[in-house]
Length: 210
Image (cartoon, rainbow, N blue to C red):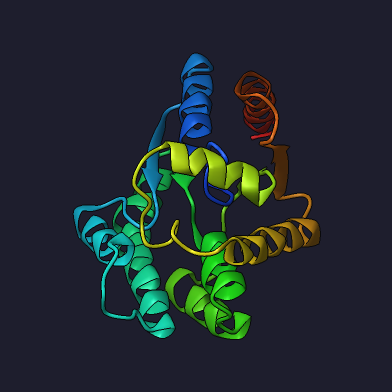
């Protein structure tokens, strides 16, 4: 019988290097002979990617906070049940760029949506399913935003004010502090080489513990 894979999510504010470290983690798993996939939220399936486009596109029409929250969980429900869970059951590790922690941080901390409402949707969509481990790439907001601006045109979320991202960062840190066994904070303000080394060591440790 195939053992269940592990679900590892990568979280953080804009410009902390999640894409780079996801690729680094994938390379580490490959070198260790671990079967894996890389995916992202919102997105991960054709339907969920269509919802992602709706969410990220700058628009003149104001987007109601509840509309944004429900779209996030609509994409997540599709992604979770048609891709993440089947891959885990096949024994593959799933590396995911953001998951529900991002919703608590962005829609909760950033937008001010009640955490209780997010938790209700989390339980409705996910049941008791949670990431096995969360790798939180943390850096001062200004550091991340400077990097994000250098990437090119900003999406609807990246255009928010600095205070929005400060609230997001603090929400992430509070969640990590409340569950230190599952959350792993990596100092993303360091050089890319040092961050990559730290993430590689962390992923190797997770494989050893699996």
